[in-house]
Length: 491
Image: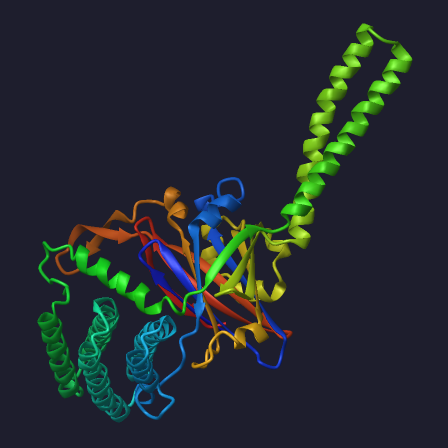
């Protein structure tokens, strides 16, 4: 099973989150994702202006474990809860100051705050998604109760760590975790307040005020412990605060991120093809030289002319054979890149990816059926269709090795976060805002108005696993300033 989410990242990139679940019943699980990006012909994005190397420079991928799934209440409940594991790791480290116990202590601090971030995010998303006011109220009430208890329980461990005199280094690990918790609470409460403020009525005004009060309390706590806070003044850049929060996120989630090593696939075969092409060209040149020598003799002008011609032909034959045969074999049997997915000393999976501009006639019919262009799109492209990028990714998880990575938490799979930067696509776009004239029916005057110029990219993703496939379509709206929005299109 593959889970996907597409969203804007920054302003010039869109991000594709792919979640691959491992299957304990199989030795290995293989997932295929084909992403077709349909671009307007007028932007002149094709194999001559946008190369394979350009695409992979514009692409950034991070692979990490899926965060263990806990509800907010489950973080504290039971001997197997994330809090119990954290508390036990602290007790073990206090009892025995070994390197193994120190490592386990750091590990459980980071896992607790990472799981908390995922849990509160999902809880707030559930609140936002509900249409029933009663359900919203119930979930909001639950949120504040659980948050208060989680923060109180975590922060109560601070005194235990200080009294045990574990050392400043290990105390700071806990403090960084506390700071990350506070930052996460602030971020999610701001999302909740913004969403509640958008309602046209005041049915949830009490809940919104309670969220604001909780946020104010947390901001006061941040001020008390000296946490860098975002300044709302327009002349403040908040550079240091943003930088620190980025570092804190890396600190908190580094246990979930995986190491990767990427290499070109088919490099050995490529060298064999190059050698064969050189040999074939040499056979041709040597054969011509022998024949001309027998026919014209040594040290004659015709013999010299044939040798020069054979040398020129040899060089061209070598390039033609090398380029054509290598391109076809590589495209048919190999991907462009191969990335090993590594946890510790164990290779738990492999990711292969390839890029190509594909002719519309070679695109599967079921993909074109989902694309189903409107007449406006055809007119925009001069009835010539679109330039289409195909980005193919194949991910294989070695399930047995995957199971052995985490002993204390249930990890259901890996997340592949792919960011594609489209800044190169905008080089031939028109100005984002164009002047127009319109008739104002109220003032009875001709008025100059501003019109916004946008382009549409269609992104169709085909997911394949266990001989099953499903498709998702997204429309990306962008102009020369960057991506404006992304909409999911019903198939």
